[in-house]
Image 1 (tube, rainbow, N blue to C red):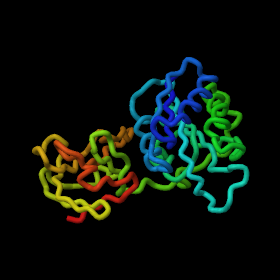
Image 2: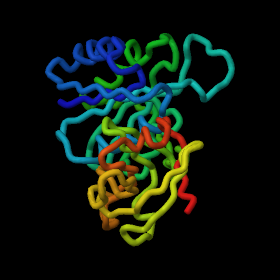
Image 3: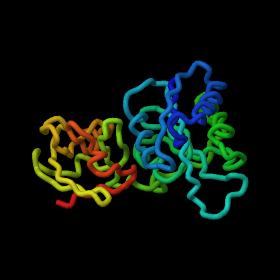
Length: 263
């Protein structure tokens, strides 16, 4: 079994090791991969759930995610209560278990065969992804669905915002939530992009390396997935500075910041 743990604990945080230990108690032969997203970034969490879950991989696969900013209720918390646990069965058979918060389920909501509440405690621990959730995930992966509760509809989940930074990779490329199909431009068209207080010229390209050194390209990137029977796969646009870092060019913006084409 392949288990991907997506959480906002922080790169190298021992919390990942604690969760891994609990998961290995019930899945002793599993391969576990850890992916850290920025703190409280449900957008980045949701993006990677879809990118990893909807693309090819092992058939016996679990995505276990935890990004729970506890923003569903502004009042004081009783017994460390937080957002509820959910189960999603993707159209390709991949199982997804994790907290329903913000945009965590937004990218996959149109690609699910089943979407249900998991009946476990919403409180009892500040560290629910270690202390409360692993037994529920184990039961589901072992085809024990007794903890599953009510179904809920995709309409109850917020849409993906169409103009945000979804991720910044290790090369400084800025992955956005802007679908490549939404931009109808000829290659080499000059455009202007704003992120925060920074404005930069860019060139629309149908392939990132089809620009000269030092040029900022706005092009379909490597992220996206099949849309099933709807034809062309979904691809997202990226900002790519050949020979440099688009992230540095735009003043080191954060995930979830707005990306605006102003010309």
